[in-house]
Image 1 (tube, one colour):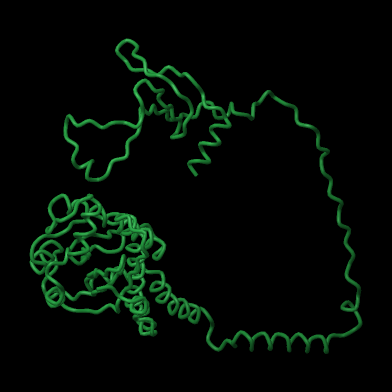
Image 2 (cartoon, helix red, strand yellow):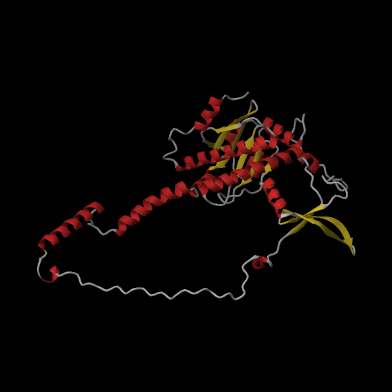
Length: 373
């Protein structure tokens, strides 16, 4: 079921034969595909706790009608829709094969043996792809040079032709760019992909720096040519003509009369600066007094607890969460998120308070910062 490394490398090299050099739109699609593969490679192993190396490669993008394309893909794929409002007003569609979707969501929830994507597993899958799209947004921001943040993400249920056309608002005969991808991890392989309409691709391509610069170059050249008077010499010819004229003037210039006189000498006045004197102190303070009025957030932390997604989803009114701190143990006082002191909880006139028992020394604060980094 797995792919060899040569096959994965081949997927990475698809479309690298220069066919996109004269097609800016195809070049943008390939760059978006590369950014998506990077995001999937970085996020999925973390979510499933895999220590194995993950590789994802993209095939050459192809263009088909939506109904024809969905009919050629496995019907049990897990399809999802999302938006990228900064790049396009159209809805984008993605998919991942069912087995990988089920395995990914079960490992996130700590479950095994499920055969269908129930509500809890779909919720976990939704969280997984929100993380993937978050990394994708960061990559697209770097690619396009503008802020990018995806909108609502939703996994679809039912037959893809019906649900995708309805939820994405696309007609069955809409022309779609399909970016198929294949990944391998832990000796298994899976498929996923992106579906981008022709209209969305046109919007996205218009915002890519490579396309805008390519369009601007001919316009700039034309404007420069229009500004240059007709009959002007080329830059090098103009320089040669000026040099020749200057030499001719030097040969014909008389050596007597005013032109032979020495340049008039000029006296440059000496600059005079005021003598600097020590500045008298007017009682100003330049130490910590300057920031004494700056507000800081103080937080009292009773304790912490790490829970899995499954445990969090199982919480109900009345559920108990046991903190990792013993009863009677001092609570932590944090200033702007940094440990500053320890104290004990007290009650004063029906209000909670904290009596400071110890202040963290500067040395301990530095050690805490080192641990945090």
